[in-house]
Amino acid sequence: MKDEREPDPSAAGEAAELERLLIRSARLDVPASTARERALARGLGELRSTKRHGLRLLLGGAGLALAAAAALVLFLQKDRAAPGQVAAERIHSTAAPSGSAAGPAAPPVVHASCPELVIARGDAPLIEDFEQEDSWVLAADGRKGSWITYDDGTGTQVTPSRSALFPSRIPGARATSKRGLHVRGGKFTSWGVTFGTELADAACYDASRYAGIELWAKGPGQIRVGLQMIDVQDVKYGGLCQTDCYDSHRKIIDLTSTFKKYSVRWEELRQLFVAGPPVAFDVRRVRFLEFGIAAESTPFDVWIDDVAFIPR
Amino acid sequence: VLTTSVLPAAPSELRSVEHPRVMADEAFPVRGQARESRFRELVECHFAFVWRSVRRLGVRAADCDDAAQEVFLVAARRLDDFTLERERAFLFGTCVRVASTRRRGARRRPEELDANSDERPRDELGPDELAELARARPLLQELLDSMSVDFRAVFVLAELEELSVREIADVLGVPQGTVSSRLRVAREQFRDGVRRLQARAAFAWRKR
Image 1 (cartoon, rainbow over the protein chains, first blue to last red):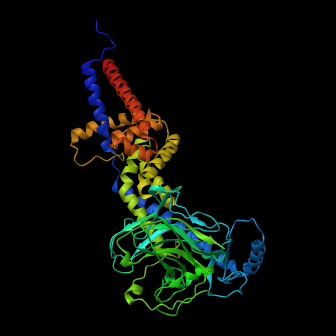
Image 2 (image 1 turned 120 degrees about the horizontal axis):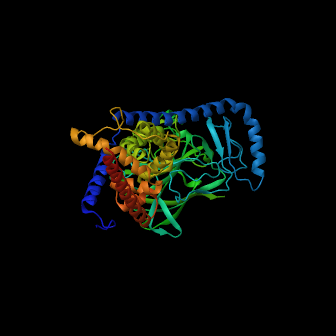
């Protein structure tokens, strides 16, 4: 009599054949092309509804702005005097914030409106250490934004233009830092490449409690570190500039092949390409922290890390 | 107020093609466009993978379109939370969660593959092979459904998506050794299931 534990070659062969048939049957798992279109439409609807929700909030806030402005400013003054508090103030107002770019003691200057303003307290200087695997800046001192890159369209970046930027692992690390922001690309022939982040989403950010920007970076080439005020941004995108826009305030720094720490103080920032009337730099109404790579510095292969404000 | 630039004007071309800087969504449309562009690419590249995954993770064929949509809705909301390199891992992890929720809510009855099913054969299949595969597909689902989620995920990615151990480890975020050991167990479970199917078929044949 045959041992029941001994495998039956014919049964084993049939089992193997059945296994293959079952695996092959998974080839029937094919979605309808219309299913993809529906998923795309629904997802895009989700993205757009999020935007509309944000806009409604913005407009609603603007409607309450005048009534709330005086109380908020008073509240702000009280808060600034209180030590140990970390939350920044977000106000909707057409009034200028207290203090000035030169220091809190200077008289306030009234500008055209920022639709919304976030006033930093100055107690959380680190903007981004890139150790998280997302594109958001660290949520501290009222900051909110995500890293994004743009280019002039005449060349190619590893991360395509208008895409979010994510941290990359630094080969061999840098001291205790394992990740940084790595941007690479080929030759560009117009204005080049700009990457950076909003500081307070769509709002203006008052960084007057800080003295400048510092970062670690390595090259080769040069980068232009700067801040965009709402005044140099195109009105089409929520700015106040009508013509010759995006001449933001920057400083050119020369990079080296190894990581080096760079500091840029507010008083070092200049508009590099003044075309129309120059815009005086006011660190209380900035919206975008930018790093520019001019066409003459391309192709480019740049790392930045540990981007922070300089405490006063 | 600190400074007024005294630098000369730039060549006109440096100003004329200035970048459309953006910050937020409705008021700053380019950022929104970038997100939409990325989402379109995400759906374009991964929809079939997501649909297959939710199907193989136990979602009924008739519900797979909705489940895949649900996965991409989550992806749309969290578009800034995962890197390009981690897209497939994020989507598969979401597939696992969505499939788990839908399985719990599904009625417990055997699924039949019929002409109205959402499962669409590939064009290159002949009628005989198509019929054979159509009979086999519910059996495959039965075996997959008998596995726990961890083993099923590894088995699906290895045997049906034909990913390497390294790729599976990346998608699931577990060590390669874990993938190998889970795959070994999953294959044993699958073979046991095939033997059960054979035995059941033989029993049914003897009953005739």
